[in-house]
Length: 124
Picture (spheres, rainbow, N blue to C red):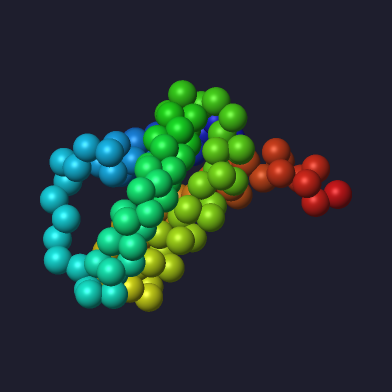
């Protein structure tokens, strides 16, 4: 669990989540043109007034947990539905950003595999 490879992946994922989470509160990464269906979906999430902020807060919290190496197995499990939804959003609504979604989902899956001993009691 403490190999250099695992540490690099954990930090990379944590920093990416921090950047994308903070970007939802204070937009500093330019948004490129999206497919109309994707833009409508994002607008509907923004119109709720809370959904994107909850996702942003979770991304920041999970990113911090990964960067400071605190409760990493918990953070990875908490990230799984978010990573899955990021991936599915890009598969069905905006294929242009699928590379980042695949990388996030893949790193999440690899780290879950690396920390599998922490999850074993859940399946006994």
